[in-house]
Length: 97
Image 1 (tube, rainbow, N blue to C red):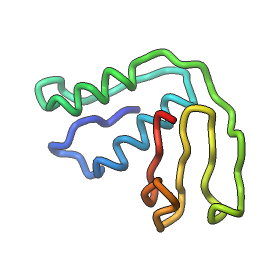
Image 2 (cartoon, rainbow, N blue to C red):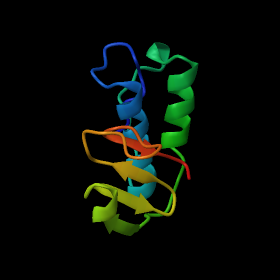
Image 3 (tube, one colour):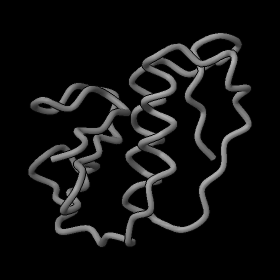
């Protein structure tokens, strides 16, 4: 489920971006409950990206050398730690690669 709106959302921009990246690598059904009128240009762009069809991706690495919780996919890199790891913010994603 994509959450692309800023208004009335408890997610930060980083978290909204990370959810979108996860939808991309997981593939499958896409949905959003965001009222279109509540989306700014950034939110609309993110929603459009979330609704693009993609094939499921598989992790290429899950490595301890990056802090134990950085997962690499062919299209994205996720940081599940509480600290920045390289270019990836805490609980964030580098997407697209």
